[in-house]
Image (cartoon, rainbow, N blue to C red):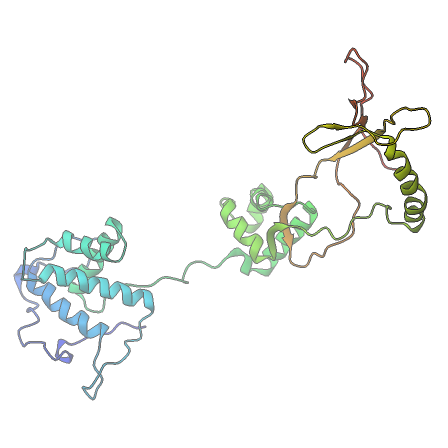
Length: 335
C-alpha cells in the first residue's frame, strides 16, 4: 500500500492547534535518520502524531458515518497499533509521567516482545513524527528468490542426489555446493547452511520418514517349502517334543510327562544363524515422494554372519573348559 499524508482535519476531535508549526525551533532541524530512536523534542509533536495515527488506523468514511478499512496487512496494522499505544502512554497526562523509552518498552511487552521491539517502535515513531508518510514497512516475501527457483540449478541438484543413491541426506547438498567448480559455475561465495539444505530437500519432494519396505522375499512361502513344513516337519516335531523338558515363565523346570522307549529325555539343539547388515538400523531417511515400496531381500549392504548351536537345556554349544565353542563368524558372499 502506498503511504499517504493524512490531514488531522479528518479526525473529528482534532483541534486547530493540534499540529505544531513546522517552524517551531524546539524540534531542531527535523531531518529523518532511520537509525535515530531518541526522544523527540516537544510532547506536542507526539500528541499530534497520536491523533494522526488514530486517523490512519481507523479512517472515517466520506459520509462521516462509520469507519472504512485502511487496507493494511495484519503485520503493518499491528505495528501501527503498537506505535499508538506507546504514544498514548507517553502523552498521557494522568498519573505518573513515563519516559520515551519506558512507554515504548511498555507497548512492546504488552504484545509479548522485549527491548529490541521497543527500540524498533521508537525508530518508527520518530520517523513518523518527522514525516507522516513514513510508516513501518512489512518486508515479508520481499527477500531474495531461492536458488531452487532456477530450474537449471534445481535439476542439477536432483541429478546429484540421484547419483548419491538411496541414502541421500541434506549434507550431500551442502558438500556439493561447496565444491570449487560448482561454486564458480553457480557464482556462489559459500555453500548453503544445513538448515537451508533441509528445506530444499522438502521443496524437491523428499520427506524424512521411514521408508516402506513392501514385502520381504526369502523363499519361505514357496509351495514345496510350505508342503514339507506342514505335512512332514510339524507332525514329526509334535511327536518328539513330548519327550523334551519344558519350563514355566519363571524358569521352573517341568519334567516331560512322556518318556521315550529308552527312558531318556530328548534334548534339541537348534542351529542359530544370524546375519547383520550395515543398513539394518537405518530405517528413517529422505524418501522422495515418487518412490514406491518394492519387494526386496532381507538385509542390505556389507554383511557379517554368525553361526552357532543353542539348546534350551544347555545354552550355547561349548566345551566344558569354556574356551572352545561352536560359534563361527564369517562374511557371507553372493553368487
